[in-house]
Length: 397
Image (cartoon, rainbow, N blue to C red; front, side):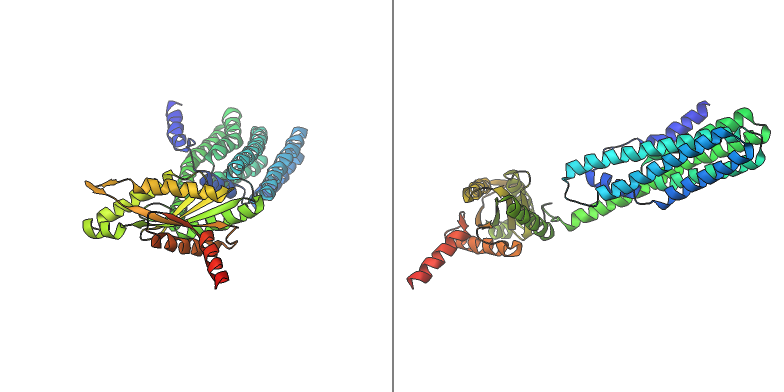
Protein backbone atom coordinates (compact mmCIF):
# COMPACT_ATOMS: atom_id res chain seq x y z
CA UNK A 1 0.00 0.00 0.00
CA UNK A 2 2.88 2.35 0.74
CA UNK A 3 4.23 1.86 -2.78
CA UNK A 4 0.81 2.56 -4.30
CA UNK A 5 0.43 5.71 -2.18
CA UNK A 6 3.89 6.89 -3.23
CA UNK A 7 3.08 6.21 -6.89
CA UNK A 8 -0.17 8.14 -6.64
CA UNK A 9 1.60 11.08 -4.99
CA UNK A 10 4.21 11.26 -7.76
CA UNK A 11 1.58 11.01 -10.46
CA UNK A 12 -0.81 13.58 -9.00
CA UNK A 13 1.86 16.14 -7.97
CA UNK A 14 2.17 17.71 -11.47
CA UNK A 15 -1.59 18.38 -11.49
CA UNK A 16 -1.61 20.71 -8.50
CA UNK A 17 -3.35 23.85 -9.76
CA UNK A 18 -0.93 26.64 -10.59
CA UNK A 19 -1.83 30.24 -11.19
CA UNK A 20 -2.72 30.48 -14.87
CA UNK A 21 -3.24 33.68 -16.89
CA UNK A 22 -6.94 34.52 -17.34
CA UNK A 23 -6.84 33.96 -21.11
CA UNK A 24 -5.37 30.46 -20.63
CA UNK A 25 -8.07 29.62 -18.09
CA UNK A 26 -10.72 30.82 -20.53
CA UNK A 27 -9.29 28.64 -23.30
CA UNK A 28 -9.28 25.62 -20.99
CA UNK A 29 -12.89 26.29 -20.05
CA UNK A 30 -13.90 26.50 -23.72
CA UNK A 31 -12.20 23.17 -24.40
CA UNK A 32 -13.91 21.61 -21.40
CA UNK A 33 -17.34 22.57 -22.72
CA UNK A 34 -16.55 21.92 -26.39
CA UNK A 35 -18.13 18.45 -26.70
CA UNK A 36 -21.68 17.22 -26.12
CA UNK A 37 -21.80 13.88 -27.98
CA UNK A 38 -19.64 11.91 -25.46
CA UNK A 39 -21.92 12.98 -22.60
CA UNK A 40 -25.00 11.81 -24.49
CA UNK A 41 -23.38 8.53 -25.54
CA UNK A 42 -22.16 7.72 -22.02
CA UNK A 43 -25.56 8.50 -20.49
CA UNK A 44 -27.38 6.32 -23.04
CA UNK A 45 -24.96 3.40 -22.63
CA UNK A 46 -25.13 3.58 -18.83
CA UNK A 47 -28.92 3.65 -18.88
CA UNK A 48 -29.17 0.80 -21.43
CA UNK A 49 -26.71 -1.56 -19.75
CA UNK A 50 -28.00 -0.86 -16.24
CA UNK A 51 -31.57 -1.50 -17.42
CA UNK A 52 -30.57 -4.80 -19.05
CA UNK A 53 -28.77 -5.95 -15.93
CA UNK A 54 -31.65 -4.81 -13.70
CA UNK A 55 -34.04 -6.96 -15.73
CA UNK A 56 -31.60 -9.89 -15.75
CA UNK A 57 -30.94 -9.77 -12.00
CA UNK A 58 -34.39 -8.55 -10.94
CA UNK A 59 -32.75 -5.89 -8.78
CA UNK A 60 -35.02 -2.83 -8.14
CA UNK A 61 -32.09 -0.84 -6.69
CA UNK A 62 -30.47 -0.84 -10.13
CA UNK A 63 -33.55 0.89 -11.57
CA UNK A 64 -33.16 3.66 -9.01
CA UNK A 65 -29.45 3.98 -9.81
CA UNK A 66 -30.21 4.02 -13.52
CA UNK A 67 -32.71 6.87 -13.08
CA UNK A 68 -30.25 8.81 -10.92
CA UNK A 69 -27.50 8.32 -13.50
CA UNK A 70 -29.72 9.58 -16.30
CA UNK A 71 -30.60 12.68 -14.26
CA UNK A 72 -26.91 13.34 -13.54
CA UNK A 73 -26.05 12.84 -17.23
CA UNK A 74 -28.77 15.26 -18.29
CA UNK A 75 -27.45 17.74 -15.71
CA UNK A 76 -23.98 17.56 -17.31
CA UNK A 77 -25.56 18.10 -20.71
CA UNK A 78 -27.65 21.04 -19.45
CA UNK A 79 -24.61 22.71 -17.85
CA UNK A 80 -22.65 22.40 -21.10
CA UNK A 81 -25.45 23.87 -23.22
CA UNK A 82 -26.11 26.67 -20.71
CA UNK A 83 -22.40 27.58 -20.65
CA UNK A 84 -22.32 27.91 -24.42
CA UNK A 85 -25.32 30.21 -24.38
CA UNK A 86 -23.94 32.27 -21.50
CA UNK A 87 -20.59 32.76 -23.26
CA UNK A 88 -21.99 33.55 -26.71
CA UNK A 89 -21.64 37.29 -25.99
CA UNK A 90 -18.18 38.75 -25.41
CA UNK A 91 -19.35 42.03 -23.91
CA UNK A 92 -18.75 40.84 -20.34
CA UNK A 93 -15.75 42.55 -18.68
CA UNK A 94 -12.71 40.20 -18.51
CA UNK A 95 -12.65 39.97 -14.69
CA UNK A 96 -16.35 39.18 -14.48
CA UNK A 97 -16.01 36.70 -17.32
CA UNK A 98 -13.20 34.88 -15.48
CA UNK A 99 -15.34 34.60 -12.35
CA UNK A 100 -18.33 33.43 -14.37
CA UNK A 101 -16.33 30.74 -16.12
CA UNK A 102 -14.98 29.52 -12.80
CA UNK A 103 -18.56 29.15 -11.57
CA UNK A 104 -19.46 27.18 -14.69
CA UNK A 105 -16.44 24.92 -14.24
CA UNK A 106 -17.52 24.12 -10.69
CA UNK A 107 -21.04 23.37 -11.89
CA UNK A 108 -19.67 21.03 -14.53
CA UNK A 109 -17.37 19.39 -11.97
CA UNK A 110 -20.24 18.85 -9.53
CA UNK A 111 -22.39 17.18 -12.21
CA UNK A 112 -19.42 15.05 -13.31
CA UNK A 113 -18.63 13.94 -9.76
CA UNK A 114 -22.26 13.02 -9.10
CA UNK A 115 -22.50 10.97 -12.31
CA UNK A 116 -19.17 9.25 -11.58
CA UNK A 117 -20.27 8.41 -8.04
CA UNK A 118 -23.53 6.90 -9.30
CA UNK A 119 -21.58 4.92 -11.89
CA UNK A 120 -19.22 3.71 -9.18
CA UNK A 121 -22.03 2.59 -6.85
CA UNK A 122 -23.82 0.87 -9.72
CA UNK A 123 -20.63 -0.90 -10.74
CA UNK A 124 -19.95 -2.02 -7.18
CA UNK A 125 -23.45 -3.47 -6.91
CA UNK A 126 -23.28 -5.33 -10.23
CA UNK A 127 -19.69 -6.56 -9.95
CA UNK A 128 -20.28 -7.92 -6.44
CA UNK A 129 -22.74 -10.41 -7.94
CA UNK A 130 -21.81 -13.80 -9.38
CA UNK A 131 -23.48 -13.28 -12.75
CA UNK A 132 -20.67 -13.29 -15.38
CA UNK A 133 -22.80 -11.72 -18.14
CA UNK A 134 -23.75 -8.74 -15.98
CA UNK A 135 -20.15 -8.37 -14.84
CA UNK A 136 -18.87 -8.46 -18.41
CA UNK A 137 -21.37 -5.85 -19.61
CA UNK A 138 -20.69 -3.38 -16.84
CA UNK A 139 -16.93 -3.90 -16.93
CA UNK A 140 -17.13 -2.64 -20.51
CA UNK A 141 -19.11 0.40 -19.34
CA UNK A 142 -16.51 1.23 -16.71
CA UNK A 143 -13.59 0.91 -19.13
CA UNK A 144 -15.46 3.06 -21.66
CA UNK A 145 -16.17 5.70 -19.05
CA UNK A 146 -12.57 5.75 -17.84
CA UNK A 147 -11.09 6.11 -21.31
CA UNK A 148 -13.63 8.78 -22.25
CA UNK A 149 -13.01 10.78 -19.08
CA UNK A 150 -9.25 10.67 -19.60
CA UNK A 151 -9.45 11.77 -23.22
CA UNK A 152 -12.01 14.52 -22.55
CA UNK A 153 -11.27 15.86 -19.08
CA UNK A 154 -7.48 15.69 -18.93
CA UNK A 155 -7.34 19.40 -19.71
CA UNK A 156 -8.74 19.94 -16.19
CA UNK A 157 -7.09 17.26 -14.00
CA UNK A 158 -8.86 18.50 -10.87
CA UNK A 159 -12.09 17.31 -12.51
CA UNK A 160 -10.70 14.31 -14.39
CA UNK A 161 -8.87 12.45 -11.62
CA UNK A 162 -11.64 12.54 -8.98
CA UNK A 163 -14.18 11.56 -11.66
CA UNK A 164 -12.14 8.53 -12.68
CA UNK A 165 -11.57 7.48 -9.07
CA UNK A 166 -15.25 7.88 -8.17
CA UNK A 167 -16.34 5.90 -11.20
CA UNK A 168 -13.79 3.09 -11.05
CA UNK A 169 -12.56 2.51 -7.47
CA UNK A 170 -15.90 1.22 -6.03
CA UNK A 171 -16.00 -1.49 -8.72
CA UNK A 172 -12.40 -2.49 -8.02
CA UNK A 173 -13.15 -2.77 -4.29
CA UNK A 174 -16.30 -4.81 -4.96
CA UNK A 175 -14.47 -7.30 -7.21
CA UNK A 176 -11.55 -7.72 -4.84
CA UNK A 177 -13.73 -7.92 -1.72
CA UNK A 178 -16.59 -10.14 -2.83
CA UNK A 179 -15.20 -12.08 -5.79
CA UNK A 180 -13.07 -15.13 -6.34
CA UNK A 181 -9.61 -15.38 -7.79
CA UNK A 182 -10.59 -14.31 -11.31
CA UNK A 183 -12.66 -11.41 -10.00
CA UNK A 184 -9.70 -10.22 -7.96
CA UNK A 185 -7.49 -10.52 -11.04
CA UNK A 186 -10.03 -8.49 -13.05
CA UNK A 187 -10.09 -5.84 -10.33
CA UNK A 188 -6.30 -5.62 -10.25
CA UNK A 189 -6.19 -5.23 -14.04
CA UNK A 190 -8.74 -2.43 -13.80
CA UNK A 191 -6.69 -0.77 -11.04
CA UNK A 192 -3.52 -1.02 -13.14
CA UNK A 193 -5.25 0.66 -16.09
CA UNK A 194 -6.61 3.37 -13.79
CA UNK A 195 -3.18 4.16 -12.32
CA UNK A 196 -1.60 4.06 -15.77
CA UNK A 197 -4.17 6.52 -17.07
CA UNK A 198 -2.76 9.14 -14.69
CA UNK A 199 0.34 9.36 -16.85
CA UNK A 200 -1.91 9.87 -19.89
CA UNK A 201 -3.78 12.63 -18.06
CA UNK A 202 -0.51 14.33 -17.17
CA UNK A 203 0.76 14.08 -20.75
CA UNK A 204 -2.43 15.47 -22.30
CA UNK A 205 -2.68 18.24 -19.71
CA UNK A 206 0.93 19.30 -20.25
CA UNK A 207 0.62 19.13 -24.05
CA UNK A 208 -2.54 21.27 -24.08
CA UNK A 209 -1.00 23.86 -21.75
CA UNK A 210 2.18 23.99 -23.85
CA UNK A 211 0.10 24.55 -26.97
CA UNK A 212 -1.99 27.29 -25.34
CA UNK A 213 1.07 29.06 -23.94
CA UNK A 214 2.82 28.86 -27.33
CA UNK A 215 -0.23 30.41 -28.98
CA UNK A 216 -0.25 33.10 -26.31
CA UNK A 217 3.43 33.86 -26.88
CA UNK A 218 2.96 34.07 -30.65
CA UNK A 219 -0.09 36.28 -30.25
CA UNK A 220 1.83 38.53 -27.86
CA UNK A 221 4.78 38.82 -30.22
CA UNK A 222 2.46 39.63 -33.10
CA UNK A 223 0.94 42.56 -31.18
CA UNK A 224 4.04 43.97 -29.47
CA UNK A 225 7.18 45.78 -30.53
CA UNK A 226 10.13 43.39 -30.34
CA UNK A 227 12.59 45.97 -28.97
CA UNK A 228 10.63 47.91 -26.35
CA UNK A 229 7.81 45.48 -25.54
CA UNK A 230 5.28 48.23 -26.22
CA UNK A 231 2.21 47.75 -28.38
CA UNK A 232 2.74 47.79 -32.14
CA UNK A 233 0.54 49.03 -34.98
CA UNK A 234 -1.79 46.02 -34.77
CA UNK A 235 -2.57 46.56 -31.10
CA UNK A 236 -2.72 50.33 -31.66
CA UNK A 237 -5.44 49.86 -34.27
CA UNK A 238 -7.38 47.56 -31.94
CA UNK A 239 -7.08 50.06 -29.08
CA UNK A 240 -8.23 52.97 -31.26
CA UNK A 241 -11.25 51.08 -32.58
CA UNK A 242 -12.33 49.97 -29.10
CA UNK A 243 -11.50 53.30 -27.43
CA UNK A 244 -13.35 55.47 -29.93
CA UNK A 245 -16.40 53.21 -29.84
CA UNK A 246 -16.43 53.42 -26.04
CA UNK A 247 -15.93 57.19 -26.13
CA UNK A 248 -18.91 57.65 -28.44
CA UNK A 249 -21.06 55.33 -26.32
CA UNK A 250 -20.16 56.95 -22.97
CA UNK A 251 -20.03 60.55 -24.25
CA UNK A 252 -16.38 61.10 -23.27
CA UNK A 253 -13.28 62.13 -25.20
CA UNK A 254 -10.23 60.23 -26.42
CA UNK A 255 -6.87 61.82 -27.21
CA UNK A 256 -4.14 60.54 -29.49
CA UNK A 257 -0.61 61.84 -28.90
CA UNK A 258 1.87 61.39 -31.76
CA UNK A 259 5.47 61.95 -30.67
CA UNK A 260 9.02 61.32 -31.71
CA UNK A 261 12.27 61.89 -29.88
CA UNK A 262 14.21 65.08 -30.52
CA UNK A 263 17.94 64.64 -31.19
CA UNK A 264 17.63 60.84 -31.24
CA UNK A 265 19.45 60.53 -34.59
CA UNK A 266 22.34 62.53 -33.16
CA UNK A 267 22.62 60.09 -30.23
CA UNK A 268 22.42 57.12 -32.57
CA UNK A 269 25.14 58.49 -34.84
CA UNK A 270 27.42 59.47 -31.94
CA UNK A 271 27.21 56.40 -29.71
CA UNK A 272 25.96 53.67 -32.05
CA UNK A 273 22.83 51.60 -32.40
CA UNK A 274 23.32 49.67 -29.15
CA UNK A 275 23.07 52.88 -27.12
CA UNK A 276 20.25 54.05 -29.39
CA UNK A 277 18.24 50.89 -28.78
CA UNK A 278 18.81 51.14 -25.02
CA UNK A 279 17.69 54.78 -25.16
CA UNK A 280 14.48 53.81 -26.96
CA UNK A 281 13.70 51.24 -24.26
CA UNK A 282 14.40 53.73 -21.48
CA UNK A 283 12.25 56.38 -23.16
CA UNK A 284 9.43 53.85 -23.63
CA UNK A 285 9.54 53.06 -19.91
CA UNK A 286 9.31 56.74 -18.97
CA UNK A 287 6.37 57.30 -21.30
CA UNK A 288 4.52 54.26 -19.99
CA UNK A 289 5.14 55.33 -16.38
CA UNK A 290 3.05 58.46 -16.98
CA UNK A 291 -0.03 56.62 -18.29
CA UNK A 292 -3.10 55.42 -16.42
CA UNK A 293 -4.57 51.94 -16.51
CA UNK A 294 -6.43 51.67 -19.80
CA UNK A 295 -4.18 54.09 -21.69
CA UNK A 296 -1.81 52.65 -24.28
CA UNK A 297 1.51 53.61 -25.81
CA UNK A 298 2.69 52.03 -29.05
CA UNK A 299 5.97 52.23 -30.92
CA UNK A 300 5.20 52.51 -34.61
CA UNK A 301 8.73 52.70 -35.97
CA UNK A 302 12.13 54.25 -35.33
CA UNK A 303 11.77 56.82 -32.56
CA UNK A 304 8.05 57.35 -33.23
CA UNK A 305 5.45 56.61 -30.55
CA UNK A 306 1.68 57.01 -30.27
CA UNK A 307 -0.24 57.35 -27.00
CA UNK A 308 -3.95 56.55 -26.81
CA UNK A 309 -5.42 58.39 -23.82
CA UNK A 310 -8.91 57.09 -23.10
CA UNK A 311 -11.81 58.47 -21.06
CA UNK A 312 -10.96 62.15 -20.73
CA UNK A 313 -13.48 64.95 -20.28
CA UNK A 314 -11.63 67.98 -21.62
CA UNK A 315 -8.72 68.74 -23.92
CA UNK A 316 -6.82 70.06 -20.90
CA UNK A 317 -6.55 66.45 -19.68
CA UNK A 318 -4.56 65.69 -22.84
CA UNK A 319 -2.45 68.80 -22.29
CA UNK A 320 -1.58 67.68 -18.75
CA UNK A 321 -0.41 64.29 -20.00
CA UNK A 322 1.65 65.89 -22.78
CA UNK A 323 3.39 68.15 -20.25
CA UNK A 324 4.20 65.15 -18.01
CA UNK A 325 5.69 63.24 -20.93
CA UNK A 326 7.71 66.29 -22.04
CA UNK A 327 9.10 66.68 -18.54
CA UNK A 328 9.92 62.97 -18.23
CA UNK A 329 11.83 62.82 -21.52
CA UNK A 330 13.59 66.12 -20.95
CA UNK A 331 15.51 64.70 -17.96
CA UNK A 332 18.92 63.21 -18.86
CA UNK A 333 19.31 59.46 -19.50
CA UNK A 334 22.29 57.45 -18.26
CA UNK A 335 22.79 54.81 -20.96
CA UNK A 336 25.74 52.38 -20.62
CA UNK A 337 27.89 55.04 -18.99
CA UNK A 338 26.85 57.83 -21.36
CA UNK A 339 24.80 60.81 -20.17
CA UNK A 340 22.31 61.45 -22.96
CA UNK A 341 20.02 64.46 -23.29
CA UNK A 342 17.03 64.34 -25.63
CA UNK A 343 13.49 65.70 -25.71
CA UNK A 344 10.31 65.13 -27.63
CA UNK A 345 7.67 66.87 -29.71
CA UNK A 346 4.01 65.92 -29.39
CA UNK A 347 1.02 66.37 -31.64
CA UNK A 348 -2.46 65.84 -30.18
CA UNK A 349 -5.78 65.08 -31.82
CA UNK A 350 -8.99 64.61 -29.83
CA UNK A 351 -11.99 62.47 -30.73
CA UNK A 352 -14.76 63.09 -31.46
CA UNK A 353 -13.93 66.83 -31.56
CA UNK A 354 -11.44 66.52 -34.43
CA UNK A 355 -12.68 63.31 -36.05
CA UNK A 356 -14.66 60.13 -35.40
CA UNK A 357 -12.46 58.01 -37.68
CA UNK A 358 -9.95 55.76 -35.84
CA UNK A 359 -7.60 55.83 -38.84
CA UNK A 360 -7.81 59.55 -39.50
CA UNK A 361 -7.11 60.59 -35.91
CA UNK A 362 -3.50 59.32 -36.09
CA UNK A 363 -2.99 61.33 -39.27
CA UNK A 364 -4.33 64.46 -37.59
CA UNK A 365 -2.06 63.91 -34.59
CA UNK A 366 0.90 63.59 -37.00
CA UNK A 367 -0.02 66.93 -38.57
CA UNK A 368 -0.07 68.50 -35.12
CA UNK A 369 3.32 66.88 -34.39
CA UNK A 370 4.78 68.52 -37.49
CA UNK A 371 3.50 71.87 -36.22
CA UNK A 372 5.12 71.24 -32.80
CA UNK A 373 8.45 70.56 -34.49
CA UNK A 374 8.26 73.73 -36.58
CA UNK A 375 7.50 75.68 -33.39
CA UNK A 376 10.91 74.79 -32.00
CA UNK A 377 10.64 71.18 -30.74
CA UNK A 378 10.32 69.99 -27.15
CA UNK A 379 6.73 71.22 -27.10
CA UNK A 380 3.24 70.10 -28.04
CA UNK A 381 0.50 71.26 -30.40
CA UNK A 382 -3.20 70.47 -30.81
CA UNK A 383 -4.66 69.70 -34.22
CA UNK A 384 -7.65 71.86 -33.27
CA UNK A 385 -5.37 74.91 -33.04
CA UNK A 386 -3.98 74.17 -36.52
CA UNK A 387 -7.48 73.77 -37.92
CA UNK A 388 -8.57 77.08 -36.35
CA UNK A 389 -5.53 78.86 -37.75
CA UNK A 390 -6.18 77.48 -41.24
CA UNK A 391 -9.83 78.53 -40.99
CA UNK A 392 -8.80 82.06 -39.96
CA UNK A 393 -6.38 82.39 -42.86
CA UNK A 394 -8.98 81.07 -45.27
CA UNK A 395 -11.55 83.57 -43.99
CA UNK A 396 -9.06 86.46 -44.20
CA UNK A 397 -8.17 85.62 -47.79
